[in-house]
Length: 266
Image 1 (cartoon, rainbow, N blue to C red):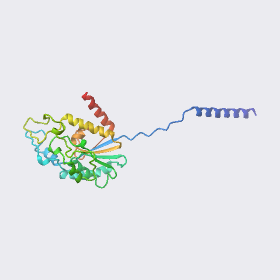
Image 2: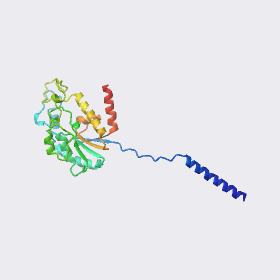
Image 3: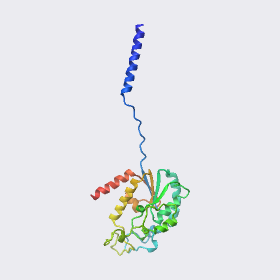
Image 4: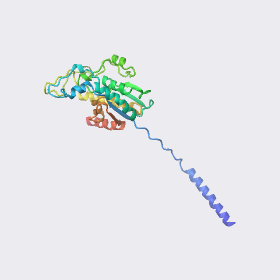
């Protein structure tokens, strides 16, 4: 009898203690899933007639180098068309695209627009926003880096949104965008001849900072950028990106790099 009473007392006491502890302990918080990091996928355009011109007898900076007016807004050559067409298969196997979280930005130069057009055949970007972004245009080295008028681009690339570009002649022009006396920064010690003024370091670096800030502000988690070698090199630090090569970075990586660039100018 006494033993039965003692066991009942112990059990009751344990239940009371357990209940009191559960009431005094704060509820366990459910851990929130980590936010998906924003990624930027840079895609260099396919090989162009200008790339071919520069790789053979007219290498950049060589003595007697001469710019060629026939290479204005240089399009893809036969190899570039083939590269951009094959890129379609690579993108299908390597990219995970969701219309609700993906945006595609394209430089308004013909070579990047055509690379986008050929590599997206088959609907890989169906439902995604497709926008032209002049910040992605190649640095103006030569006449091949000057573009075509906005009205012509709108007519030829109807599935690209050009709303954010207002100027008919949107590409860099020294007299219009900078003004004053031009100082040549390109190789010029051996009778090299250029048809247009180049885009100075400071102006180009400021444009790349604008590009970075634009990427930061976009709400999409995945940003795909069709662009050129000079832009990829400046904003990512990667120097050897080949035609139609894919280069992916996180926004955090860009944040660190561009933050360091800002500090270096102070």
